[in-house]
Length: 243
Image (cartoon, rainbow, N blue to C red):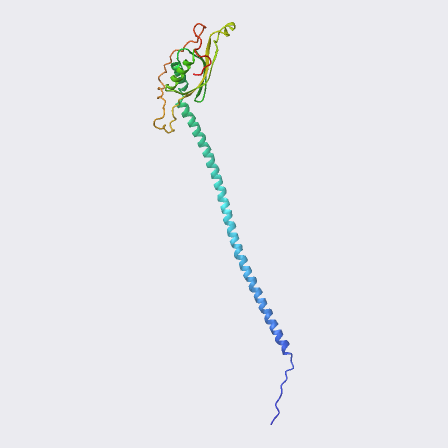
């Protein structure tokens, strides 16, 4: 019987296995690093392309917005010019419609002015007219207000003030204790014809009479003479009273 041969490995096999595992780990780590760098590079390229695309779109939008701003400015200028032309057109139409207003006002004042009333001043501001004058009595002022209400061109009489004053034109020594008359201030409105583009008034509302043709001259009644002597105007019935 032969003796068994005993083989003994004296090489450092543990260190070799450890070195092999280290080389395998290093190679795997390098591969993972390369793969990570590749993924990061691809991601960077993708997002960079998206950013460039969005920047180009933003530039296009800014250019189009600038063009639209220019167009909006031109539209605003055209709108302002249109508004100015419409305002001028409205003024011309208003003047054309109310060109005979002063004539009708004076004509109606002469026609509606009752006896015993003398106007000192007539002032108009727009459609509002202020009358200042003298009356023999308060009843004459009431008659004037009723005449204005029935006029086709005048409306809304409003008595502002009425008071008893000495007779104008009298001598200074006769003013105290002498004849007295009523001085009044009266506001009224002139009825204006509606402009062509205005809507007609509602049914039942007061409408001014149609204006006379431009060719026809208005008939103006002769003005009433002012009182000249104290004997013409008797003293007022109610001194300082309200009409």
